[in-house]
Length: 259
Image 1 (cartoon, rainbow, N blue to C red):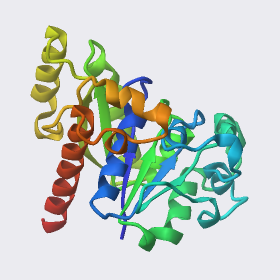
Image 2 (tube, rainbow, N blue to C red):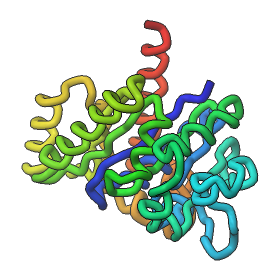
Image 3 (cartoon, helix red, strand yellow):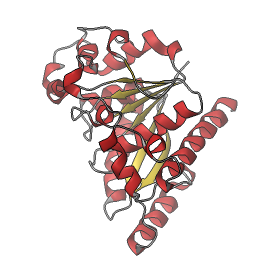
Image 4 (cartoon, rainbow, N blue to C red):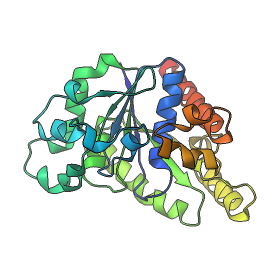
């Protein structure tokens, strides 16, 4: 069975999509079969993998609405072992479009059941909001990874997300677990960065991944070339950091499986 992991944070600009893309690519690089699902109407996960939205009709939107099957909407990427279910601008209206759909909180979960054996990992890039799309992602997931930018309001923002995750666990998906938090845009020269890291680690302990993602120009440049950092500049500090996080993810899941 595939491990299904959502990447969620209601704050924008925290490196959520970048983290989802690069962990997906890192897992694919170690020969894992990976599907990345883009649930954000901006479609940045697809852009970051070199897809131009106007050049394909495939989208997760039709799958959620029940108008299309999931398999025919999955695209093969340039990265071996890695596929993507791309976004659509129509996702921006999903909150209203799905209002009267039966079992609307479980549309993605039910669709993924039909392809469960096709992948080792299914990663979901959530929109920066706690609406019906994020609810669908979390209801479909076994785990959630929370990217946290090293800034003053990091902890304040995550508390709202944790409250929403608890509500999902209580009302819809009791198996959902927080796999970890990853600190992004880390600049060790800044006292604020170090203070935020200390605060987050003191609050959440071993729920915070040991590896931090540095501010790195190669990470920023890679999406404009339609590549994950790993395939844009393998030796860059950003690419290597994401490889280490992916290793932590695999190890954490293996430990959970062995319990």
